[in-house]
Amino acid sequence: MTIRKDVLANYFGTGVSAIAPILALPWYISLLGAKLWGLVSFVWILQAILGLVNAGLAQALIREISSLFSSAEDGTKRIAAILFGFERIYWGFSIATGILVACFAGVIVNGWLKLGNIPVETGKQVIYAAAIIFTVQFPASIYRTVLFGCGHQVQQNMVAAMATVFRHAGGVAVLCIHGSVVTYLAWNILAAFIETLVTAKISWRHLHVNRSELQWDLAEMRKIFALTIGLTASVFMGILTLQIDKIVLSWSLPIEQLGYYTIASTVSIGLLQVFTPITTAVLPRVVQLQHRVRALRMLNFKLLGVMLVLVCVGALCFVIFGKFLLTLWLRDVKVVSVVFPVLSLLLVGTGMNAIYSIGYVNWIATGASNKVLLVNAIAFTLSIILLPSLIDKYQLYGAAFGWLAINCVGLLMSLSWIVKGREVTDRA
Image (tube, rainbow, N blue to C red; front, side):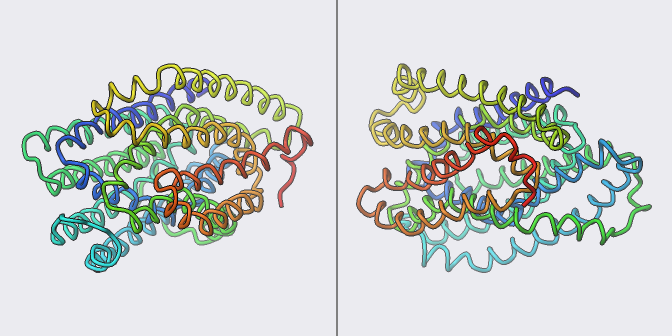
């Protein structure tokens, strides 16, 4: 499978995954209302926070699986042994975490969220649903990792696209038939569970290994965990930095304000998917070229050119058509007046992220997790110190600082590959 085909497949999968919730969002807001939508937004924030345990591990696994798949004679069997072990770890962790979250539902609802006139019982039901969604959804990441690492990106993206359409189209239909937030979340539980089962079946089928022949490969797993320690810490901090704005918002402001901010964040992260398919497809190639400095440098400059073109075209389109498209989409002038300026700030960070991702991919491919850790540590420190006062003073505008901070720091530090041209050999 060539990089071009992988890029196209990733564009299709991530494009559908980004566009489907964006198209469904006006229906969600209309059928649920701003307050209940804000409460549902907290469910997805909770998923991101709980999923932090996978931070770094998935990328380290892709790196290891890509190397085994392309070089080792017994690579497929070793990959199957890795999946056999981590599959059990992922499922065990997701079940334990789901139970823990359900036990603390009352604390989260009464001690953290500002529900206003939303019944406390409804809040608890939403947290219970969030716990179940995490339980059935989290293990899918290990199966996706295997498919990506083995070069089956086309099939993985097809599954992800169909699952996303199934989830959001069904979610809108369920709300139209029975406008209950609990029913809507029950549909999401079903959709997440089906996607996990399908992805698991496909990943095992590609390995052509009978599970009964496998056993725990503790040596291989220890090796992966050793590679993951630094990367996990850095990615963990980075993802937490991206969520800290919503965490502080959910604690400081009424729940409907979190809903408005989530709209802007959904668009910003959705547009980031324009760039993600490229870096996802390029990562295995960067791993293969890490010792061929000249070839890797040429690949990096091609990647830079592509990213710059996409950023400039996107910025021009947003300036000309952004407000019109947002109004056409949300169909509510009041909501647009709140979302548009916040979205403008977040998109600046999205543009910086696209350029930053070039250096980031090289760091991941060469195991330079210390650089990722340093970037995220600086951004996290700035966010945790400044966000509470910024949100208190500037409300939603202040909340956008975390996204801007991590991408600004990352962009400035990642540009060193252009100057030195040999950063890819750094394995610190």
